[in-house]
Length: 185
Image (tube, rainbow, N blue to C red; front, side, top):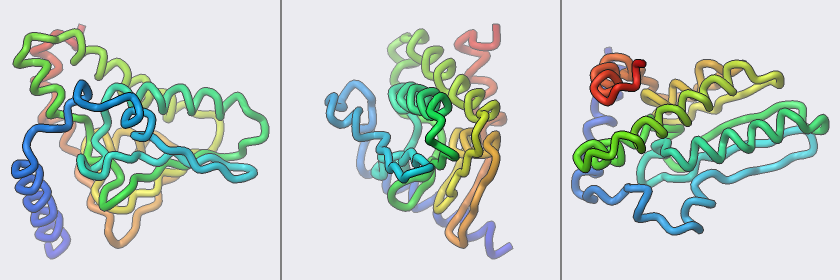
């Protein structure tokens, strides 16, 4: 019970602080340097770590991040020198899911193709992680919601800490959205 209250409090604080910041996490407002820095890489002799690096947006996954992760994971899978791959988030979240602010704006502008491209790219990343030939370790330190759980659960291992708050709300909230934009076909 205490864990649920803590999770609800954390989500409430996150929601209120994001409302005060405004709707500024649109992918269109980011520069190319920002896009390159949204997924960082740490390399060791036998491993690679992808670091989700959008701490102000709780590392919410956007299309460019998912596409970069796909490229990285494919190249690492083909590299015989890499024994395992890890993913972690910067700041207080692993990944708070998909960038629903961008989705909201795309839908309001009638830009359903960008919405579909986001889901295609994100779900392809989940498929790559789920069928990855090398061990995959998701380091869940902090908030992991929706797509954050989606990119961690299919992997080989998930490591949770005492700061992990994992919520799988994806199917309840996004199913109507996916159907409304015609992604179910």
